[in-house]
Structure formats: C-alpha cells, structure tokens
Image (cartoon, rainbow, N blue to C red):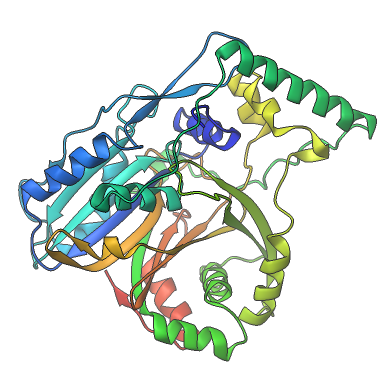
Length: 411
C-alpha cells in the first residue's frame, strides 16, 4: 500500500505537534568498535530500502497522502569521542531529533564508542514510517537482504478520494441508523507540569537484559506466559511509583501484518489490571482482549479521520490508544540482528522515544514497556513519562523484577 493508513496519519499528526511525539529506536551494543566502512554499508542499504521515503500530500479533498521513495537520509553519524556508558541512554534519546517524515529524512543511523569499551549503534525513525516490528524488518532487510512484501500500487488521487468518501458516507449512515453514537470520552486529566518546574529531560529510561530461561521459568511457575509476566511487571512498576488508583488501564499493541511489510500494521487493545491480578489471570484477560480491539465509537468509520481537517481529526482522536501503561511485546527478533558484520552483539533493544515532548503536554501514559527476545535473552526497555516520580525507571524495574524472583543486567 503506498497510501497512508489511519494509524500512519495519527502518528504524522503527532509529529506535527498534534499529539504525543513518538519515534521508534533499535539499539545494538558490541564489545568492540564498529568500523566506519561497515556503518556506511548498513546506511546505504537503509537509504535505498523502505525507510527511504516521505509523505506527499494531495490537493484532492478526501484522497489520502501517499508515500514517495526519496533515498534521502541524514548522514551516518559517529560521535567525535567516546561517551561514558552512564550517558548511553541520554545519547540514544537525542537521536530522535530532526526527523521529518514529510520533508525528510524521517530516519537516522548513528553510532558512538563507549569510554569503558564497546560501541552502540542506533537506528531511529519517525513512528509515521514504521512500528516496532517494522523497524526490525527494515534492519534485517538491510543486513541480509531478507525479502519484504512488495508495495501495492495505489489508486489515482481522484479514485482514492471516491473510495474514501464512499466508505465514510456509507459507514456513517449505517452507524446513524442505529442511533447517535456517544461522544468520545476524552482521556483522563493528567497533571500538566509548568515548563519551568522541571530541569533536564521529561522522560527517563532503562534497558535490562534478563535470561530467557529464568523469565520463562517464572512465567510457567505462575501459570502465565512471557507476555503476561511482562504486563504484570510494568503494572507493578506503576504501583511502586506511587500510582494511587485501584485499577490500571493497560494498552496492548497487536501486530496485524500477514506479510513482512515496513509500515504501521497494528491494532490496539486494552485490559484492566487490579492489585490481585497474577500472570495467570492476566494471561486469560489479554487473550480475551486480543479478540476485541479498540475501534471508533458507535461504528463510525475510522476513515473519517482522513477526510476532515487535521486539527478536527486530532481533537477526535485525542488520547486514542493511550492508557495508564503501554505494554508492547515486539516479539522475537531475527537472528541477523545478533551481529553487525564481524562484531557479535552483546545486547539488542527496541523501544519508543519521545523527541520534543514537553512537560506541559504529557500523555495519559505514565510508563511504557517494550519487550523483545533474541537468542537466550529477553530485553526489557522501559520509558517513564512521569517527571514527578522520584524513583528512576532502573530502581523501579529492579524492584519489580526482584518481587517476581528475577534479576537483570542493566545497560
């Protein structure tokens, strides 16, 4: 598909300041420096791959914007000097700056050596270009040439507009015959902190590697799965941070692609979590939730968001998919990501970051968690979006892991 989906446009509006800014990031650690020639080869493969595109808008009312291959890219960036390992995540957070999926480029490849030894490579892209699974497909394609699903040619602008308007008008008419839908419920109020009350970054992060053998052992011992244990852990982190509510609302992304495509091919579902829940109860609750995904209210076609002005669409979709926590299980990563050329990776992580997020525009989501598995390890990436919490994500994660009988290695 070379036209933007509803989800693509939601992330595009967020990039333009009408929502929470989000970029996706993959991080690779190696024990020794990655040579510049290898970095340039990876960069060139990415440049001519599916991330090398931008959004092109149309003048035809109702026609969706389309993707155009450009090959534009920020140069592969390497720091002039090694950075302390303690500054690794601060450096990684900064790699989301100046990404633009419309004017371009919407992605960046960068690397830095670590003063204590080793190297980190980062691939960051605007969420308008890809979701978490798509980012892993893009780098796998660049490293090994693994085939991706071919893009399907789109209609002309006029044909696309006719199709969109027919969907919106017909679907809305059918929905209205069942009665007026309830007005969308705005997201719960979040205390908005004045910009002059916080020094430093709005978000804080942690990345932890945990033995897959131990993670799965604990999950099975609690009649759960690796995923339900992950959800339990992120919920416990929020409660340990001082969250006062008796129930936590969790949003769970679902990968909906049936072919390996680099796009936003996902849906959202949600579950409610109480303090009495266990990996066992969450396993059953998540399984049921995956069958009932979030939809637009009253059966109104979601394509409505693509034919009305951006600011109206942003207002209607405000807070869509945002809950108290986000638990994104990206899944098992391809084995190709275990090394960068001749350099074995000592760690691989995937997460979202929030370049330009302001303390007076915080989303409802307070903690986001991202889980991946590669070889013998799970990697848990945690992002705290609550500057008012005194504990660091590392401290919260360490306690939550210990409470479940687990230990991890922190980046």
